[in-house]
Image (tube, one colour):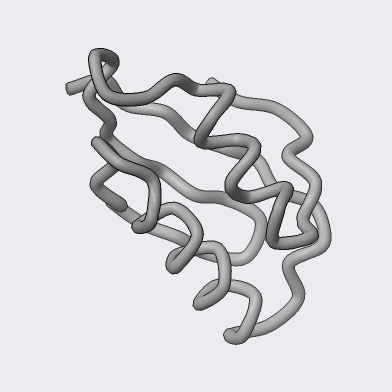
Length: 69
């Protein structure tokens, strides 16, 4: 498992946290560690998904991923 932290713009409330959590949980191979306002940390199986797919899931919910680490 690989750890990925996403720095997310546009999250302002608990609904945002829940939406991002749902989006990340739906990505095959991803286990959500934490999601807070502006940041999400996940563990993922690199044979099942990519950082780009994870970032796209968040962006599909309407949030901007400023950076990953």
